[in-house]
Amino acid sequence: MSMQGQAASADRAPTVDDLQDAVAPRVSRGRLALRALRHRSLLAGVVICVVLAALVAAAPLLTSIDPNLQDPLATFSPPSWEHPIGADAFGRDLFARVLYGGRTTMLASLLVVVLGCVFGTSIGLIAGYFGGAVGFAIMRLVDLLLAFPGILLALTVTAILGPGLINGVIAIAVILVPVYARLVEGATAEVRNLPYVDAAVTLGAGPWRIIARHILPNVLSGVIVLTTTWLGIAALWITALGFIGLGVQPPTPEWGSILNDGQNYITLAWWITVFPGAFLSLFVIGVNLVGDGLRDELDPTLARR
Image (cartoon, rainbow, N blue to C red; front, side, top):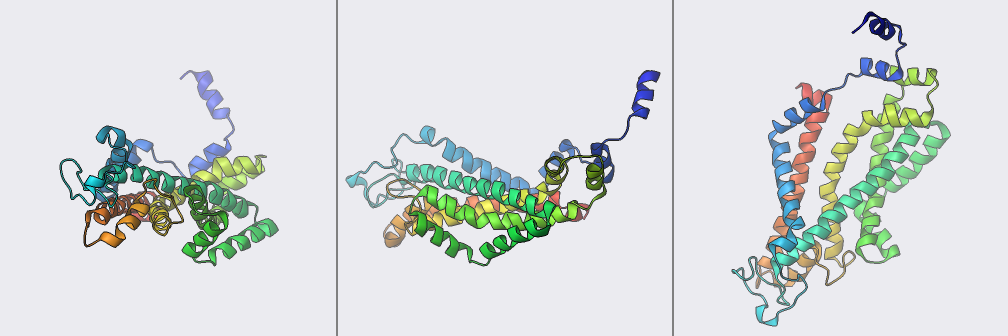
């Protein structure tokens, strides 16, 4: 570097980003990725989720059978070469229904956590940063929603909106909004008092820039862990709504509706409930392992241990 460049670098006034880096130094993404790969439960969870996602995404390539095609001659057929995991009471191929049903369940669960995360995080950031009467009013509404049992709130919203997949997604997302808001509000209230945030205010940065540039990145670790944890819970609730008839409506395949179809034939045709239940269990286990691993890697206290 030339003498002029060094002089210019030395004369440059420190920016807010420089102050933030000095207070909270960043870890390179490469180091985080390498450290995460050495975490066994995280790696196992990622493998399970990737395999399941690949299976449901490749459903048209793995089977050419219409999941809603009925074959009276194949009613209650056990697992065979023609029907790898059997057929249901209407002779529909269970392998096709489980794969296509997995698409519905997994995508609906992902949509639930995305909606809950976006709205809940936004509410928590606003309440935590501005505080005062605005924050107090917002958090009292959040506390009101948290006072209701989750499944009861979901059933109430679904009963108001009516049965269906979209309404089920909205109902469960309503449950997640206050959960994210409470977490983010507490983390934002702590970060707001750090030196680099005070420096940003002193240098004239607007509140929305401070929230987006200096506060949000520092609360994302908790949001990510919460998202992976609730992804599995959302899948269970989507399945529960489908099981009781308030979620996906027949004949669209979904793991909950498939379990509902097979509950009366558990002794006659066990495969109708065992296989979709096994896929659901693997998905929940996989996302929970990912959530536990991410918590270990993103929590500074656990990482130092």
